[in-house]
Picture 1 (tube, helix red, strand yellow):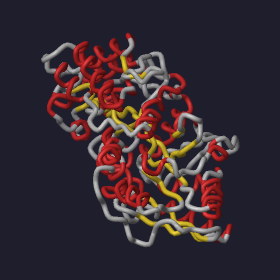
Picture 2 (picture 1 turned 135 degrees about the vertical axis):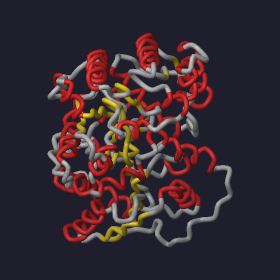
Picture 3 (picture 1 turned 30 degrees about the vertical axis):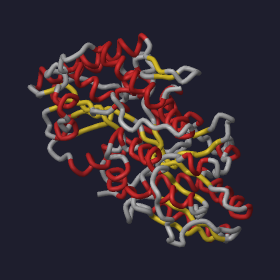
Picture 4 (picture 1 turned 90 degrees about the horizontal axis):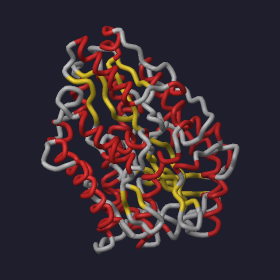
Length: 440
C-alpha cells in the first residue's frame, strides 16, 4: 500500500458526502456549549514559531513533515505540525475560535462562519503568476478576498476493465485532447458487455458529485443558483439527467446502486463490469486490490464540455492571531506554494495539484496508477470553470451560515429510477430542497 491509499480512504472515501459532514457540523456547532480545547496547541505564534493544524491518518502526513523540516532549515522558523483526528476536527476548530486559541495555519475540510472573519487574505499567493494556481478552485468572499487555497484537489473520473476492452477489440481515446462523448462511451461499453458476457456496462457512484460531473460534461449546470440565490435547472440539465436515469436499466447500469445503495466499486472490482464512474481517490486502492484483470483510467467524456466536479482535498488557511504571527504564516504559505516546494508535497503525499505546469513523480509501483495520475494532471487544466462551481458555492453558503446537510439528489433520483416519480418531479424536489436549505 502506498502512502496515498490510506490518506484517500479516510479523507475521500466518503464520496460526495465527505465535504457535507463538516458543513453539517458548522450548522449545529453554534448551538452547542462546548469547552475550549485546552491542548496548548493553538494560537500564540510569532515570527519564529508557528502552529499548523492538519487532519490525516497518522503516518500519512509525510509531505507536510518534510516541508516543515525544510522550512526550519531555510527560514529558521519552527512550524509545529499538529495532526488532529478527522471526526473531531471541525469542532476543535470551532472551539479554538471561541477560546481565541486558533492555530496560525491550518489545512481545513471546510470553512466555519465563527472563524472566517479571522482569516488572512491569501490573494498575494493566489495571484502570483509563477505559482500558476487554478483560480477556479479558490475560496473567496463577496469582496474578492481569497480565504483559502486548496492543498490539493479531487476530480471525478472514468475507469475501465482494460482486459474486457481488449478482449472485445474496442478502442479507447488515447488522450483527453481527443476524448469521446458520453454517447460514444456508452455505445463502446455496451459493445464490450455484449461481446464478453459482462454483467453490466457501467457502475456509477451514488453521488451528487459524480452526477454533477456528467451533467457539466453534457452542457448543463445541474442545480445552479442565480444572482439572487434562487436555484433552478436548465434544459441541458434536464436532458442529461433523463439520459442518466434511462441508463439504469439493469443492463447498461444496475438499478440497485442508486435505488438501494449497492456498492459500485465492489461490482467493478469483481471483473463483471466494463467501466466505473468514480474519481481519483480510487486509484491507490485499485493499485493494490485489483489483481484479476487489468484496469485503467481513461479520458472523461465531453458532450460537448470538458469538465468534472472538482473539490478541494483540503483548504489551506491562515489566521490573523497577531501581527507577527500573521506575517510569518503568510510567508510560510507562500513558500509552500513555490512550485519546487509544492511539487515535493504533491509527490510525497500523493496529491492532485492545484497548480498547473507541474510534472510530479508519484511513488506508485503500479503502472496503471502512475498512468491514472498522469491523466488526471493532464485533464484538470482542460476543465471548464463550471467544474469548480459547487466547491465555491459551498464556501458561499458557509459564509452565510447555511449548509446542505443532506443533498436530496440520491433519494429523489432513486425514486425516478424505480419508476416512483418522473425525472421532472425528481428535479423539482431537488431544486426545492436546495432552495429551502441554502437558497437566497
